[in-house]
Image (tube, rainbow, N blue to C red):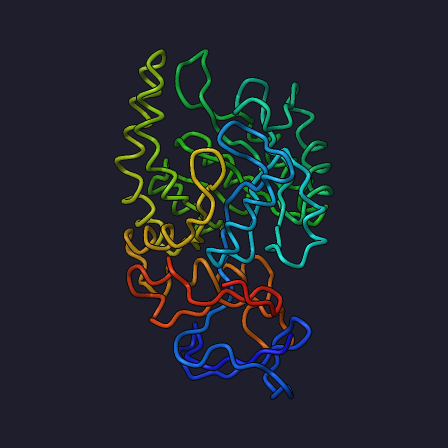
Length: 355
């Protein structure tokens, strides 16, 4: 399929003209190309930097449902997915040119009874963590996902899962295997040890303090706050009647989350858009997360970049350049305006028009 497009390109905001042949972009004219877009904005395919392909409302899914989830993301323009932990082996999806590319972090790594049942690899003895991390690094696509904190029922509140010395060895093991490390963290106490150990990214980060924000800036640690999922915290708290301290803590984290993420942005912490789709969040909601990032103080341009060109650079993937995969989202109106990104006019994945 040979295509031709012209419009206003983002992030630069300048007129652009692209041709597509054999699934890649060309800055040079391609004979016989069909003009499919001529008036509007053209941007690199969107990125959901925290989703779970293969996790549904009731836990792990079958492969058919995982494929349906990926198709939903494609319809929303999310053409690159960073899967932040899944128990389902979705590597066969890489053989399909009609689905978004997935960057996998393997399975969540947790302690027994310290995460959602059926999802993680459970580490009985924390001294085994570096070995398990190295294994998941070899299985994934350049990322490993730790569970940094979770409710500890013996204390009735969020608590860290790992000691500082083991974390340092585990993160070193991931880096030695060519992988970066991220961690699920809701509360305050797990953050200092993870950041000091050299972790590359924090997911959620609702317990950020001024001190841990400063640490993230010093270490260059990224943040994917999953703001639309944090909106579920009150419901989680309401269901935790047996653990009143935990319930109160979750409500407090919810109340301060947007101010804390805003403070991280102001301090210079790199922030990227992720929905946490799977389980409590439906797939295909990246536009809602972009709007939420604008709500914590990011400019409309930067919020969109956190789900497109900036996220692609962070993940080591090409954006809109000659010879890159033709993964594009086209909007007749400026996608930085409210509501526009929810309704892309055209989604092009590897040179094929899907919407």
